[in-house]
Image (cartoon, rainbow, N blue to C red; front, top):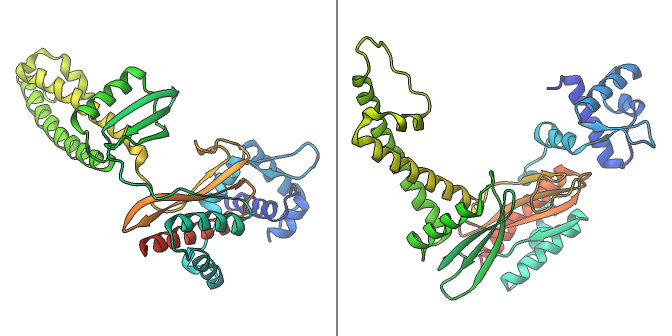
Length: 341
């Protein structure tokens, strides 16, 4: 989207704004970017970046500041963040020393305080989550693409989680999903349910493929022999073809079950955790949906299992490269500290 000149100027502008906190003008960019460009050329490039929504111009200044979209591009393509292994040894030693504690609860509390003190922002750490064995599960629609997940454990403990989904579900769909899970998977962990559903969906996909092949063959034989080619577009459209005989009913049932289980997998996918550091900028996070804030988060492991998450929450104008190192190091050392308990 941007040529090398525009990328260099945008990177320079964001780095200067993060460091100094004041709008950056064309004269400053001319000196700091290392590019031999006239002020007029720089102003033209800035105007283009502004048209793309990557920077904006405050009313009180002729300089520009990054927008959340500009920060996103910076983090994704322009930031050169060093891995945690390349962090100053003193930083890792400080984190390791602060996380020495006798009890897991103290490790978590120390980690949150450490993240806050190192970042000068807000440090957040979730306690290790236990396997979510459920006796009863229920989904309640809160709003578009926001669902309340209620898990009741065999001993009566109730856990509530607000989750975000990729599409909107009706309450009728959620009730159907709850009933299906309670009837077929009660007593399992969410992780076990996801694995079992994955295996069942793969098996269903294989069955559907076999039936589709038989259905297309039957349909081909029913067509005129002069037809040179059969093109299938849209598998569900085949359900309306009458030539498939007894296979048609089985195919419909398989599709219905396949769709039901893939929908359940999407609903349960929210409990999985992605590896590595993730960055949410200016309202991208459902948990912190504010344009002025960013979240740098990472999961931590105990015994090889992802059990919790920690994060730094601060303004969009933060030193993302440093926050990535702080969060990454802390996540690794929290996992090490808890694994030793």
